[in-house]
Image (tube, rainbow, N blue to C red; front, side, top):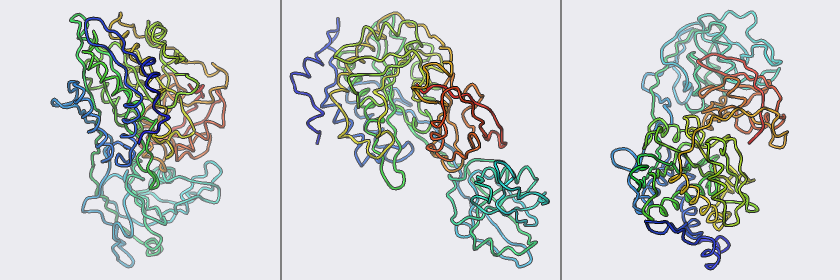
Amino acid sequence: MIPRRLVPPLGVALVLLGALAVSARGALVAPTAQSLAEDVATLAAPDMEGRRSGTPGADRAARRIAEWLQHAGLRPGGEHGTYVQPFVIERGARLRTANTLEILSPAPRGLEVGRDWTPHGGSPSGEVAGEVVFAGHGASGAYGSRDDWAELDVRGKIVVVLDGPSDGGRVTRLEKLLAAKRHGAAALLLVGDALPPLDATAVPVGLPSATITREAAAAFAPRARARLRVDLDDEEQRGVNVIGIVPGTDPALAAEAVVVGAHYDHLGYQGGVMYPGADDNASGTALVVGLARAFASAGGAPRTLVFALFGGEELGLLGSGHYVRQPAIPLAQTVAMINFDMVGRIREDRLIVQGADSGSSLGDVLAASARGGVRLDVRGSPDGPSDHTRFYEAGVPVLFFTAGRHPDYHQPTDTADRIDAAGMARIAVVALHAIERLAGDARPTYVKAAPRPSSQGGTSGGAFLGALVDPRMAGDGLKLSATLPGSGAARAGLRAGDVLIRIAGVVVDSLEALRREVRARKPGDRVEILYLRDDDAHGVTATLGVRP
């Protein structure tokens, strides 16, 4: 049931959302609060399971969105005449049949994979054999820890180390692996209380490795010899974008396109709790679908309109990144991209629009589109960790519409009953006018914005690193899925695929740990970052900027 407070009185709706007259075609009618609320509720419902890309819940959401676009009369913009554009989320590891760990001497014994031990997901496949050497917690003397490798000769040997912190502080799995590799070990066995899943140990270091139980470790006698064989295969996980097209009506402009987009994915289940993602980003998805219905019903616009609902945003802008590489309309013919993310909780009638400086006429477009009592907080910078970033990086002018974050962001409490659908409907009116302008006016010229100085704007926005993190890697370092253009992370040379291990000497093994370390500092501060790239550790200094 849709809460009554989400739906404005009919008279108010007619005043705010009255049809926009469009010459030489049907009327362009904005989506109603009722329809927006219903679509948000559908996408945030329990059967969508939080819409985490690569899960059945996200697949159900994608099918529903495709049905909406088809019913509205949009042409398919995906692969093979469908509305769906698949993309690869990840290539993970899976066990094959030849994984073995056996004690060769002095008392031969085989250990059972899945019960006594498990290979690490990032381990290379292959076989090693040699003497077994114990190296404490595997600490290397850095960051106040003791040096467990001092006076040990581990070259060509299988090293056993304990999981967890040493006496001098915490040492991560990756740091233990890197130390073992640096000292010439043939393999590393990590003794733990539980066997981790393969995806929790997926970061590669180029050294055969595994976790063994404490009971299994007790079977290794002093100076024992062992053989480890790791046999893993790649397993591909896929997500999808959903794309519908409203062809252009002006023969002189129809070959050009405006992309109107939002991500439909969210976080799924975490710790057994569903994260419904009503505002993030069922709200943006519902708004884009509503805009698609409006333009399709009216007969289109001078330029072609591409309505794209992206998957994999929460995993690092994966869907939009794939679209930019495989666009429905070539990017050279894409005049602009408008992105909607978290538009369901407008406060004090204030709508943030970023990216006005990314195209020559975008400021004028916004000035002409403001109406319905919505106050536009226009910002020139296209900064912002959402899908428009991929388009901006590729040379497309962008606008990013958002009502901003709130305490329910990335929480199980981001539910449909907290959505302000009446506010969404007023945002839709602004969006319709902006799209109308972009679809019919002179094409904006792309402008490469200069990086903002670290001190710009004082400290009111808080410190900002500008690194997008793949949440699946939490617990084993933080894998970067992207860095924002001009950010401290980008200027320091960090890039997608790098794995953060420490910031300012502090282990960052979760997104919250990273946020905590950044928030504890101010714009302009310099931080030392330890990260993994191409199987080796590197250090860099990054200067924090101002949060957009």
